[in-house]
Image 1 (cartoon, rainbow, N blue to C red):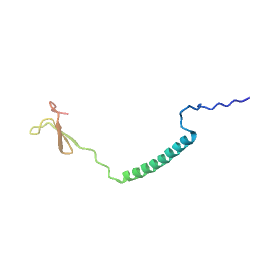
Image 2 (cartoon, helix red, strand yellow):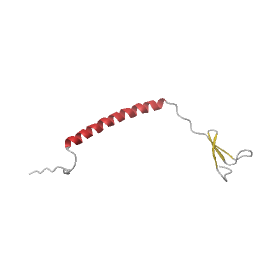
Image 3 (cartoon, rainbow, N blue to C red):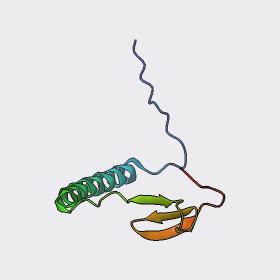
Image 4 (cartoon, helix red, strand yellow):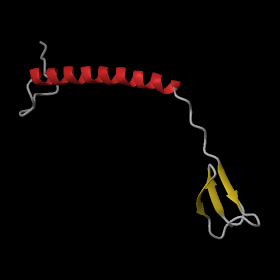
Length: 85
């Protein structure tokens, strides 16, 4: 004799099977749409020129502001008390 048990057991208050199937269908379709959008955006991103790494400069020389920190030629701050890196 075989006995079949529904697992997981139905929980009172859960949405009906038809509602769950409809939600699953909507989520699968949204996932496919997002996948297509992601592939299209990724293919366009490779065509764009890559940004160069920022050039960091530190000056602790006579005549230069001591401890000045520059990024791409623009002064962004001062490292107080630092005379060399």
